[in-house]
Length: 378
Image (cartoon, rainbow, N blue to C red; front, side):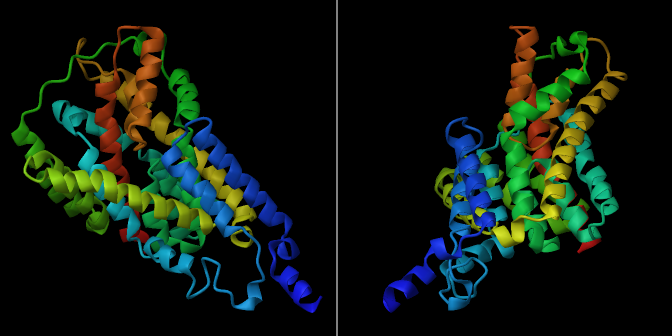
């Protein structure tokens, strides 16, 4: 009986709290959204299951080395890549190797929409500061508005490691909810006439431009924000592997095997870091609310700036303001939402390729924004 009682004392049933149960339910909800609704399944399924891993109750003082925050545990070793910012640049390498910047190169002014959408980052920074978060924490929270999970994890690992779990969950959740969150904002800020604007077909971009872009783009952006070097360097390097035409094996590894492996480990460890004792706080609810506000402001910023640009463009060269919503870096989901809304009002108005320009510009913009915040706040 003593052995049985000791065994039961180590079991999850003897150590469970209401917080563990709440987090387990949250993990199941994320997996449901990923599996049943197909909302970012490659992200939400690993994160959701990681939340289950991180919230299995065990006897904390027994020295079992099970928790992600316990030195010597397997999960702690895997989490090292998150804490030190190793995984996000590797994901950016894969993103670069699978991204086609042709839409941006064919219409370079669309990069301004990607920059305008980063407005959400800096306004949310001010809002978080007003709520009492430290400047570093506010900067890490603000990056949620970029709708870029790896960037959010990278910046929070440097500025606010204690908030990394909730920031990552917020960023990836809002990326997954793009089809739900963006359309109301897009319709509210545009007229029917503006939604019907047809844009000129994108031009065919020659190979030499595609090869030169990652080199020139890397030099320009890193001179502006050297602290974003790990993200931008890997992004543009991955794109060079893709466009050079002579390193296809490396590009294929980066956009398939490497990014898939890192995504699995990143999702699981970020999910496991959201233990009930560190996650279920009033600050977490505030951050989740600020994340939603940041994403809405970013969407509105892109749409409104497109309307502003149209004031200076001749008839026939105007931008469909819906494309401004794609300035957030949720690639390619935001561009697909723009396409869907455009077809809703005109079955012949295909906006996907036009929206991909600000969409990929948003990836660059969010990394530059993170670099600026890191330089100022670290």
